[in-house]
Length: 544
View (cartoon, helix red, strand yellow):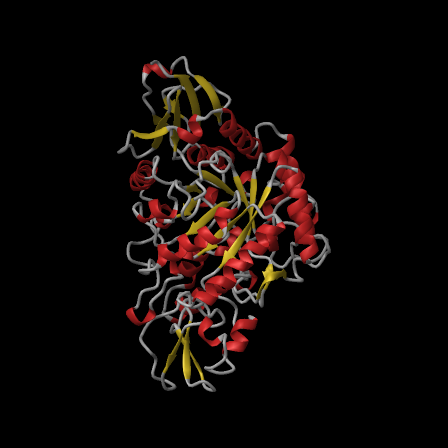
């Protein structure tokens, strides 16, 4: 068995691109692959090792490309297969690998397999999906789909229901059928031959579903299936693989990211990202961030996976709001808080992910009217909550805080028209603060959020303690300070950060007085009282 002890993905920094909003090259208002190619030098300057590309496959776009109709072709909206091959090639020339986003739990209902499956129960593709006999109006059970409504859809010509955990246009694949698995493995090998550097596996913890027992995530055969896939595909190359698992806990994460390489390189888990909502409620039911609880959650993951697994580090992605607006201060202390959040995240053990624009301190959007939003989830919740009697102001407050469109407004490249994203009309409006917050401006300013992120990406390569050091949380009950150490055989590193907009005491052990300052987000010297959102990373040789 290939053992994943290669270090490249452990000291790597990964950048997520949401292609629709990154860079438009042809003036149609939609970002595309040639646009990404034109920005590769920007990513190289930032110090990025790999790009996680949200889906660019052929898709009816019912769920932003996560409904794939052809795994082995590119949607014309984004370009051609030749463009994709060129992106892989040109990225590689700059030392950047391309990580494809793979959706293996379901396809689009417009995929060739599903069109065949609907032709009859004796069709060889029928068993590629999950069907149950029944009668119209009498559902196999009361399971609900994540996007609303029942998880079963009636097909009159077959007198059967098919199962879908997400949109009705996203029928679930039947992983119990070995032919399905073989088709998927062959497709993965095809992309590996094209030179991709890895895969991010969307909702992979749901492929072993057993709907008759109402099991969706963590089904009994899940790890058997993942180990088979890894053996048949990933272990045949030097890849980075990350499994998205909303149902992950610290125990099964050790299976997903076993150092023996039997499953994935690392796991995406979301426990920390659901903390600012009312317990037992939806993400729209806002609650203050329980800061002490957040620290203990992150510490638990750091200590549980130490030498037994590997974590992904992230604040932002295409489904989450902008972190500087969420847990920082996107007004007076935007730069300071964006840098603080970066220092806290990148100092931990795991592979850090930067979501496009995070490195600029891009902020949430506040559209004045709901008609300006594009996200289907946002539009649905707005309608549903008004119907349920919620006041409009309260609904909009939730939208401003948690809409996925916060992360999807166009990348802010410069202060020119449409922030340099497109010459045409952008598919979603640009955040008006692009004149102030943009890449061109920040690249020239040594004190910018961008330059702070660039320094962080380089520090990971220079100091092994970022990769290997053991984590220890300091001041666990402190309501203002997030401080921890990382220790390996040679060095000890301290990250201390004020997570609030008020000055806060951070009593440091005397041994840090003569430590080397690696990074600091204020020009003034570090003292025992931290300024609002002040953060510093220090390192010292370990006394043996």
